[in-house]
Length: 204
Ligand code: 3PG
Image (cartoon, rainbow, N blue to C red; front, side):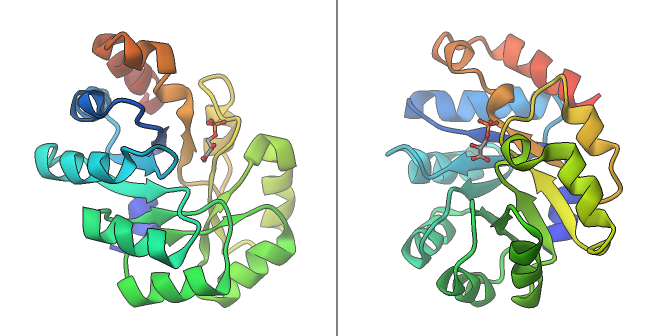
């Protein structure tokens, strides 16, 4: 699977910060139940790698990847844990080398035309726009489509149920990501039906 095929699996990608490892599998199942297929587990909590391992073993319908991958060591650890793809808030030459080495789909983060061109030059024409709302959101994506029409984006950062549709209507957006699908309180209370409902609404 390449990065474009990855984005075509699901129009929404939950960005998940696993605070309690005992919630990981049920949370993944709740999201899948709502029609989501790709899950990004960010390496921002001590449980992230265990969560990737557990979900990839126990929720076969999920396509689990690692997010907030900032270093080659993190890239390698994510792959060892079973990550099927990696996402980063940015791009460095060493991360580009890891992505080429491990051959899994990789979405580097970009926020400007130059960063997008640099990422494409490194072989990554499917990119994460981050932090989407803060750097210009829908207006920026429309503006980038003129000079860079072949670049496909997954915007994240400030996306929610209210604005996701506007992003998904753009020709250069295939998928949107965000944490709105996994509200901290709902996860802590194990409100799995509420999370399934959020996912279902987002996928509709
Ligand atoms: C990310 O890591 O992609 C973002 O932090 C998600 O942003 P959000 O919390 O605004 O959805």
